[in-house]
Each structure stands twice: as structure tokens, then as C-alpha cells.
Length: 239
Image 1 (cartoon, rainbow, N blue to C red):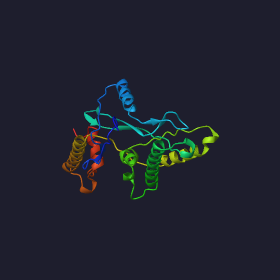
Image 2 (tube, rainbow, N blue to C red):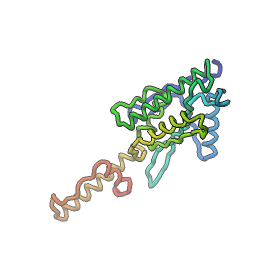
Image 3 (tube, helix red, strand yellow):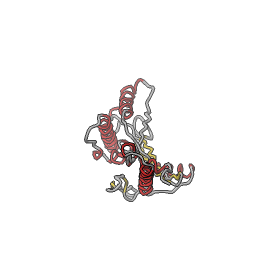
Image 4 (cartoon, helix red, strand yellow):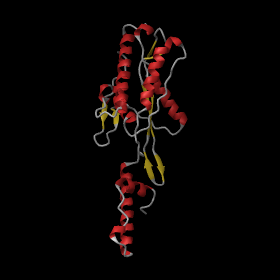
């Protein structure tokens, strides 16, 4: 159709494992106002349509990503914040959807089902997590089972007519709450490696000083592990 947005292929960086969209536009921002302006501009691309339950129903999921660059004590950190607005699951009987609206609802529910399967797999610590079953779960791979903290806000209705939807939403959110990750600081790879080497040098110097003072091998300070060396180097102990 004229004016329709072309799908963006999903790519995975073989070195870092980072998931990205080919040809995705990135905008540099330096303030809250600029970030909100980009969010507003992106929101205009979201598909909406009228159903029997909502005159401006979201017909797509939305993902807004802030890629930050922070510098502290000479070290550069590159965390990302993914803000995800999921279109609500729907039953055609209640929405009265048909034709194109019905097909959109099917795709929305398929994405949410795939996301639910991924969340269940992560909670049960299964060896295979089906990220590739949906474009939505593929894009959210880093936000769910990767190096991340995940927070889900559930929107529910106080109406007893929506009891089934409310209960299902709360069950969905409760499963997401059970995901347990161990995130690490997102530091520039080169600086992280330098910090690790500096920490190792500090450990070697401590051992050398011990032996030069006539200390016994059994009492020598152990060499730090890679993680300990990185932390030691980042703290400035490798100077």
C-alpha cells in the first residue's frame, strides 16, 4: 500500500550477540525534551484502529530504546533502556473485529503467546528458549533473558465484565516477575579488557612484593580471577 512502512530485517551481531533492526533510524538526543520528541514522532508510526471495545485500539506493539553513554572515572559504560508497550490481547467475540481488524488481533495474540512461552521457558530454566518464534520476542531477547533487569507494568480493569482478561494479565505479569537474571555492568569492551589487565598486574605486583619480602609460597596472595581483576582495575587498583 502507498505510504506503508517496509518491514525491517532483524540481525544479530555475531561478536556481541546484540539484536538490532537493519536500516533502523537512530536519533541523537541530549535532553529529556528531545527524547520525548523522538518518542512522539515514533508513536505516529504505530497502527491504531477502532474495535467494539476501544475506538483507538493499538494494532501493534511499540518499543522505544534509549542507548546511553556514561563516563565515570575514565571508564565508559553503554547501558540501554528498552520501553515496551504491548498491545493488549483480545477476543474477537468481545471486540467485534472482522476482516483486517480480526487478522491484526490474531497477530497480536500470536506475539503475546510467543512472549508468554519465552517467559515460561526462562522461569523454568529450560535449555531452549524460543526467542525466534516471534519478531517481538526476538527483539526483546536482551531485555528478557540477557544482561538485564525486567520490569512489567500490567494494565487491568476494575470492571467485573473484564474479570477473565484481568486474571490472565495478572498471571502473565506474575510469570514475568519470576525471571531471574544476573546483569553485569555494560562497559565498553576495550576498556573492560584494559581494566581486567590492570587488575591482573596489581595482583602480580602483590605476589612479587610478598616473595621479595621473603614470604612463603603457601602464604602468597592468590591471583585474582578475571572478574575480580576487572573489578580491581575499574576501581583504580591497577595504577
